[in-house]
Structures are given as C-alpha cells and as structure tokens.
Length: 489
Image (cartoon, rainbow, N blue to C red; front, side, top):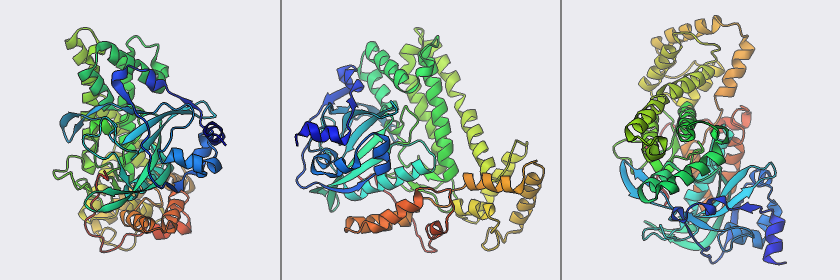
C-alpha cells in the first residue's frame, strides 16, 4: 500500500487556508520523526465525526501521521507565529513544539485544525526541544474531553502517541505527541503579533480570515472589524462564565492562550476546584494568584483589551475614535459575563425566571461554602438530590436560614418539582475530573496500565447522567493536601 492510499483510506481531507495568509504569520516545517511510535489512545467518536477511519489510524501508516513521522496526503505542515502577554509581560512566541498539519474538512463541511503537539523543534522553539512528555499529553486528553462532555467549548484530543524517545525535564520522562483538534488556533496573541511585526495589510488579512472562518454572519456589517471585536468579547464572556459554573481554573490565561473562536485552549496547569475559594490557584508558576479562579473574568477582559489594542488601526482611521469605539465594546463584557453566570447559577439552584434577590441568594450560598471550605461540585449535588444532612456547612444555622429562603424562592415559581429537579440535574455535573483521580490515572498510564484512565474517561463521558457508576468519582479524599499543576513542557 502506498502512503497516498493509506492516508486516503484514513479519510484525511485537507485544506490549508491558513497557509494562504501572509507568510509572516507562519513558517513551513517538516515533521520531526521519532524512533518507536506507539498509539496510546485514540478518540474513535471524534475520529468518526471528522470523517476519519479509526481502523486505518491504528495501522502503521496512520500511526506515522499521529506520531509526526510523516505528513498525510494534502497536508502542508506549518508552525504558526504569534505573540503574547505571559503573566502580564509581552513577548514574541510561536508554535515552539507544535505542527499544524492543515484543516480537516469534516463530512458536514465544518473545518477543523489538526495540530500535532510535542512534534519537535520549530523556528519558534527558543532553545527548547519541541517535545512533550506522555503524562501531560494524556492529561490534556482527559481534561479536554471532560470539558467537551460538560458542554464547554474546547479544543479536543484525537489521539496520543508515545514516541519511544525520552524527554529530559527535571527527570527523564517518556515522550509523546498529542493530536489536537480545534476550530482554529487563532489567538489574541496572533493579532498581537500581526499588529506589532506586520503591516496594516497583514492585519486586515488576518482579521478578514478570522471573520470568514468564525464569524461569517458579521461579514456585511458597516464596520466589520468592530463587529468582530464585539463577537469575540461575547464568546469569551460566555466561555469564562461556563468555566466559573463548573469550578474550572485554566491556570495560565496568557493572551496566547485565548482562542478567537471562543474555545478553551491549552490544558497545562489547569484543574477543577474542590473546596470553594475564589483565591484558589493550582499552577506552580502563578505565585501571585494572577490567574486564580476568582480573577478569571477580570483577566478575560484584560486579554480582550489587548486584542482591541491590536485592532485599533483597522477599527477607525482616527486613533482617538478607534480607542473610544474599542472601549465601548470592552465595557459590555462585565454585563455579558454577569448575565451568563447568573443564568447558569439559577439553573444550578433550580430557579426559573428572574427575581431581584436571586444574585444575593447565590452569593450568600457561596459565602457559606467558602466559610466551611465546602466542596463546590458536591454542594450543588447535595442541593439537587436533597442530601444536605451531614457536614459543617449543612449543620450551620445560617445555612438552615438560607435553605428556607431558597425553598421559598422555588415555591414562588410555576414549575413543578420534577421540572426543578430536571433543571438542576442538567446544570450540576455528577462528576468532574477530580485532581486525585486524574493523577491516579496518569500514574498508572505512564507505567503501562491504561485501564484506570479508560474507566475515568467512561465516567466523565456523560457527566449529567448521574449514574451509580459515577458516584465513586464524586468523592473527595479527606487528606487531599495542596494540589499543584505544571505547564508540562
């Protein structure tokens, strides 16, 4: 069988529209072969939705593509250039350990980036080896698939392949390549790069491309670039509200990790909160809590302000007027986020309609949860299924008074108890990727036992089904201790 026959049988159907943008935005890059590739995990449902043949991907030729040893037919591999504010400091970046193979056109006509992460050095590696370790790549697979199941826009993982080559960090680790699927890899940092090192024509080209790919409905607007900024702001407000509602902490909200599409991107030092506390930080490198759970909405609008700055030259020919237009759009973020978050919180508490006291009711509960270090996810589950008998929170007289107020609010709505239960079940996941469960699965997988991870993935696949099998994944160990995550580079 020839390479072309193998890749055709796999179902690759590439276009390479990004490669037709100004060349300053990317660099052609050939794959960097590895010694002994081995498929660790393949996301067969995702493969099918992309029009790919899972059986062919598992064969030698398919594995060669997933490991980065060869490009499939029709691909034009590139490393994308971008910039970013990392912890508030601006720098030039780029795909230092990633390779964009191209854009898979799915059977439904949708376009998806296919990117290899950990595929070796590129022009943007900055003295790094361009490789990735198996544990962090499997971690991205678990968390991104859990986010997808939770209904949160996200990049996804098609496969993780072990390379057979060691990766040298603090210790020697097994190497791996993750195949990431995204609506695109356009970032706020992509626009920062074009604005700082490109021409006005480069910026126009990039903005037109982003509009055509992600916001075609605004193409006919009088000021399409202002409408583009407005649309990105709205998607990010909705996305970050969804993070807050499930207790997700991104951990590294640099501008190069904010996707123009509105998807969650980059699962390095991320985690889900156990005990509720807005100051929660998991990242080992976030010493000052810049990206703490409670700060995520504020960092979101800060990042969007950096996007607005990059777009100023094309928002209006008069810079003063451009700044005013951008400021007006950015001012809308707070209300967009707040309305999305409060609507989600009403769902978590089984509240239909809107009452003036709803936000105070929500915030009172959160204050009590913080006071007693109550588990975020399990508190809402206890309310959903009326199991608020044991624990410091539920034994607090102030909680008893809150509960009476909550029940009175529910009693004023027309919907039945069955409707209320259905809303709460659909708003409160039975299971999230608990930090200790993720670490348990990764530890076993790196040692060769994939069963622990596969069982975890099955439990996370439908978090709103509330099955008996999910119950064991909802528990939190009493002696959990501080949890720290790392960038996984």
